[in-house]
Amino acid sequence: MFRDHRQGDRAMMRSDPILDFLRFVEGQERQSVRQLLDKILSKSREMTGAEAGTIFIARRRGRKAWLEPVSIQNDAIPVKKGSFIVPIGPGTIAGYVADSGRMVRIDDVYHIPKRKPYHFDPSFELKHYRTCSMFCFPLKNFQDKVIGVVQLINARKKGRKSPVPFDPSVEQLVLPIARAVGHSIERAQMLERIRKKNAELRLRNRQIAELQAQTEEAFQLSIQLLARAAEIHDEGTGNHIVRVNEYSYFIARKLGMPKEFCDEIHYSAQLHDVGKMSVDQAVLKKKGRLNRKEREEMDRHTIYGYEILIASPRLAMGAEIALNHHEKWDGSGYPYGRKGEEIPISARIVALADVYDALRSERPYKPAFSHEKAVRIITEGDDRIDPQAHFDPALIALFRKHHRGFDRIWRQWVDD
Ligand SMILES: [Fe+2]
Image (cartoon, rainbow, N blue to C red; front, top):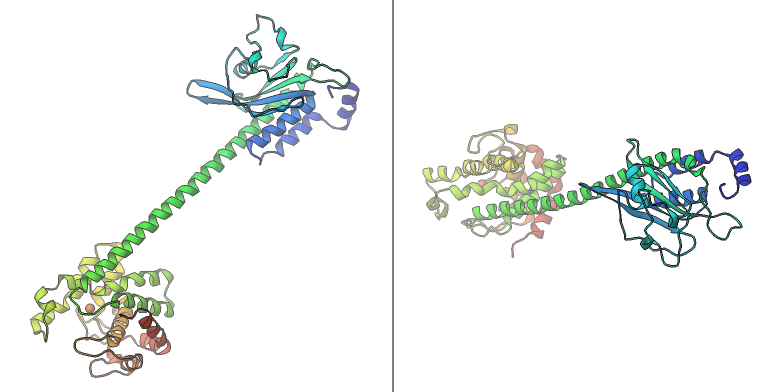
């Protein structure tokens, strides 16, 4: 409307340009700072009739303060993104506006009186362009701090070939706008900082998850090595510990145990015999029958295992299994003769898994049995195994129903 007063008066009757501007700026909040500033600059130029303009953002680090051009527009010549900075303080026009918080309106920048605390630096002039009139105003936040500067160049008027001075009324016009815009920019900057922080946090979380996965892998490997170390004196156990893990996991799932329990037994079952590491070597390696004292030492692998594993909370289930995997449902097992549900469910599961695998495997005292024979022995018994006395009846029922799964695991992990 500064281009033509009659036109402007008509526009004023239709709507309030300040309200329009505020509404415009409020609608821009979700955008990036750069997009917001581009739009603010176009709108400012449209309202004041400026041919070109720049929006600077104030940056501060320690005692240093400078202006950085973020949005540059020029209708007369093509412009590239500026890579220069302007120090805040007296000297340049934009630097003075940022420092003083005052507006500056100049009819011709090449005729600024010497007494003014600012001057025009022609070295900033773009090639094939001549700056004449200028209107420069600060953008402030709610604390009245200058956060940026809008520099508008060369007001244009219809029918006039060369630039005209900016109308004095532009000062009144931008007064309420400058603050609202400053507030919006600050909000957009804050949103951008939050977005950046969130991206950093997401990256850090990914790194932590990666480290956790590596630690978990190392943990799993360590306990597998521990379990393997314990069976070094047993002949031909091969994949025994892996299969016991798998049967136990399979039973736990079929039993409908919680996921955490299933995951824990999946790696804890293999630890049932780690106590053998502490058993007297002479007893462990002895071929043939053990006497009573030797038998007692051998049976103590349950307690030794518990003592090794109880040191770590993550091995608590392993400790419980090591201690109780030779207990029997009727109380005839060892080391404590616990019976029924006194025996932890984890150990009752592993006991069944361990026996099935022993039946399928060749041992110095027996050949390897077929799946059918193993099922028959576990469900009906033989001269060594009495299912009613040894196992949890619920687990026997479950085994009867899902025994095929055991055979599948055996065949998947069979020893060469
Ligand atoms: Fe054992």
